[in-house]
Image (cartoon, rainbow, N blue to C red):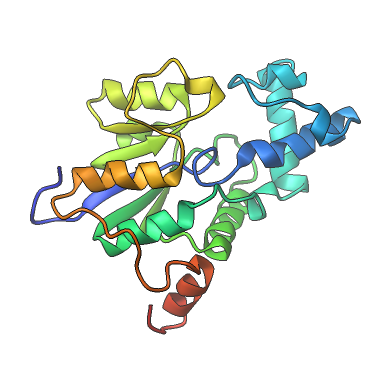
Length: 219
């Protein structure tokens, strides 16, 4: 639980938690292999081998194409309910800290960062700051939500509270676990002294609400 003289910091992963990376990457892999996206089954493992991605080098090649050629980070689908739940948490006094590993390679940093910020604004996700880095335990937060098994294990090994965002490839990890953003919100609310309201005015239009904030309006 956070100290009374500062805000509760919630570290939020992007890909697989707020943004549906798998849906976007499916399109890229299908195009590369000359098949339809529907022919690729669900993502069962972290390495996408079930889609015919042969090794790390093959993944890096496809990921680079996705980021640099297709500009995938600009228009990934948002995971249902992410923006609305984060607005309610923000309104409850939670400091939303986006933490992502999107500049993991030695190329395309400007594109990845610009497209990430564009996407966050376009879908209306609120946040107070954003960190681009690989070693998430280096970031201070009171609790985290993540889907990646290696990140969750590293964060917990450093003594952090981590909510597992439920996927096929993290079933071996212990809870707390959330299958959707309503469950994430409830778990974080349980960590706060004052809880979280279930509905607040304007939260049904997160993109419009963020636009009002950016333009100096109310809401």
